[in-house]
Amino acid sequence: MNELSIDDKMTLIQYAIQKYENEDELLEKLKNILEEKDIQRCLDTLIGTQRVRRIGPEILQNNDSHTEIPNLPEHLKPLLEKI
Image (cartoon, rainbow, N blue to C red; front, top):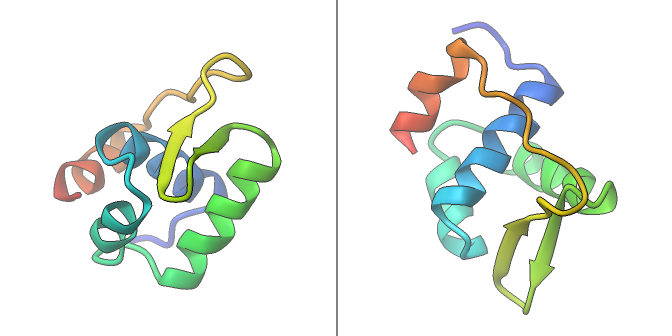
């Protein structure tokens, strides 16, 4: 499989957040596809740019009122189905 760009990783994480809002569950599911440091880096970036927000200590949510989720590229669809 080709290496994913940072934008691909962040898009994949945003779509995964729609499925799993609990941060621990999200991290567990994403570990099968991405390295933990990449997940944490992308989450920090998404939160810092206000595309994702924390709701309480363990809940993540896409910040739809601030920005739209990008369209899911075709090459990421099979990865999202694995999650």
